Image 1 (cartoon, helix red, strand yellow):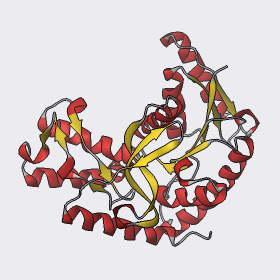
Image 2 (image 1 turned 45 degrees about the vertical axis):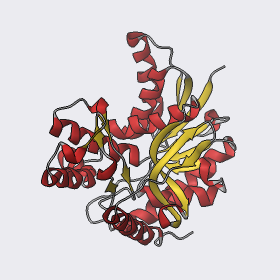
Image 3 (image 1 turned 45 degrees about the horizontal axis):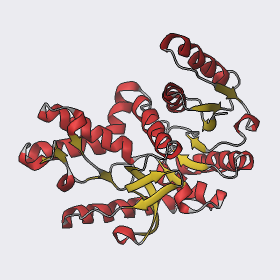
Image 4 (image 1 turned 60 degrees about the horizontal axis):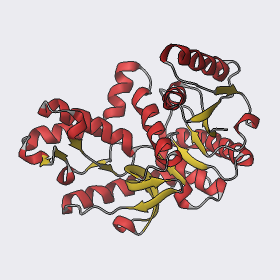
Length: 307
């Protein structure tokens, strides 16, 4: 019998994550959404894709949580996007209620599951899930840094005309305009980025990365989903397959990088137990100052939470 992963939220991001995990072919996937017919239809479609691509999917769509019982990992993508005229505080308040409700229902069925948060504002929603679930910090964390790093790496590959496979980059901090691409630790095939690209072009890539989500919203009229869904699936892979990948995730810090009691994007080792280690990079003074500013911005959003 295969192990189980539940994805809550059958919108674009959740459905993409379910599709990628089904293709991996090592776990059963349960797709949960309150909209009747939506998770069932997407699950059916993904299952039928298996006949074309030659994998053995078992994706179940549900409007409840009974089918999710006994999940090893629960990915929470549920929540509303920010709409015109909606303030940041309104978005936090709305999605806080959704994530709180989803977390309670998910852990009731899967008390031992690791929780991966994708809902926005991501850093704040990690606090909600941790407080509601009562789970230790290593078993409640968020997907952001992998996505932000993927965007930065893509821009670097285009700029240097090199393979993205040879780009090593890390983005720290909050998931928003205050994120911190660590240029000092960025290389292409082991060659420092600053030896390959002039500073003004690096600054342009950093700026585009920080505003990457907004760029896609402008183009699509909604949030991105292919890269975020794949990034969530990569986290699940590292946990379910105990890969020990070192990936940037939104983790609860207790003194690391001089930040205490806050969820922030940092490099972590991911294995069967969730976050098995947090790594502290040697930052330049400028990078540390940027990270502190990012932490202040995250604290401001977290301060809006009611619990």
